[in-house]
Length: 589
DNA sequence: GCCGTTTTCGGCCCGACTGTTTTCAGTCG
Image (cartoon, rainbow, N blue to C red):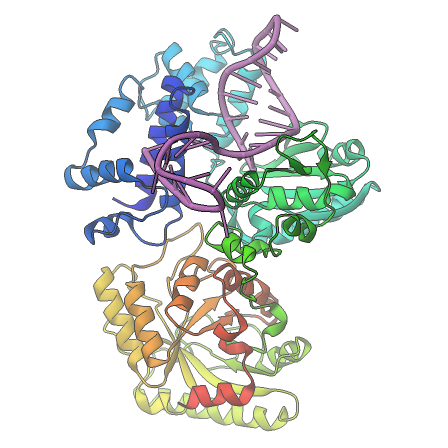
């Protein structure tokens, strides 16, 4: 059973406790929710931990839940869970994915209306709402009936709580909204919040903080946004609109004097904030979006204009938003030992660039010439770059023809090197397929003509974990294979990628000095942040590359840097921050 | 039911917004 499924099950137990007696089970609910999020965010499969006898020590899982999980893995069911879930129709749970539905509301609806079929419950409720049957239920009214119809309509179009935008898209979108907000003269400052500010690979809602002395003017302007579909809510301090189904924007306001507290509060993550507030409580302080106050003092709030002052007031260093996930950052901030994360300005070159150079390649060619890409690299103040078109297609060429194509390209790049000698250094690479057999798609004679090969998987994704791991390790074992590109093969919102034994791969790379790529392509952002951290811990070096197929895409480097920062990468861990000579040596090793 | 920078017992984050209410419950972030 996968982590997502286990997490969902524990979440459902928490919901069941809420329905039965929220007051009585208050702390069990919190405990089950904590365990659920902890497992949801885990980087290892919980069932694997169980098989290895390492389930203890897993955060959020204590003796009781551990015993339940062991029973689950052994027998496929848990007696205690069945008791908790008894009397609660299965049809409650699908509703919990719909915005605005919590356990109580879902339970009241399905029991009052006698809806027991989990598969049809959404459809059934829509039908009954249309007949006016919802408004008649105690605690519901005309307005909530209309809201249910709206929200269910959006739900069917894919607007669940789980539909998410990819980071680069969300970033551009936020810039547009912020520009619009600033048209209202009342905005002093506006910043993205939440998972967008923490630069997660995918973003749910777009949250924006505004510093202003006139929240009413800002919010009036905001809800008048011309591309909105509807206003979800609008209060004195905040408002939410929906732009298209699944795309929600929240704006929070605060005075400039207290803007630091607001930024901190809504940047999260939730886990980070809870840990922070628990720590503050122990020091007798209470934290909120308004500032810091003594827990049992006279209620006087200390306002904080910046985040730096906020964290300082708690006796710790400012923590970069990307690592605010409660994975050890608070403890290190207290000891003033946070790592210095890699920054965009540290990047000295890009190694995954597809130019339009005609090499009759196996996959998509780039749109711009090598010269055009070099010009962009110079504008970005890069010291060097590497071209890495796909290898010539094997099906259309003989071995001899491939060798000729690669030789011709090598000569072309040598001429470019002379031409740009004074301004930028050029590496001659290729992106070479690792075939299902583990062999590389071009032979050693052709590989010898390169400074190095970026190897990657582009076919036969559905292999077993062991088979795929062996395939990748065999490909990487070739002396010319220097780097594994987009290692999980995932495409965000489209496919989850193949199975690999990461521990084994990282150990191999660390031992044999092979690098792994953090690919900045918007739909990839691959290696994912949690695996970046694992790789670094294992001693693996990384490259951050854009995988550009057009010179304009070279600007996407910032998103790769964001992923690396979320994985706690420092300059030292990233090879394309190194000096040219040192890097050249590394390629020649 | 979990957990440890006052704790192996006694705590457990904080506030906004909405709808249906006559003072609050439910949901969300």
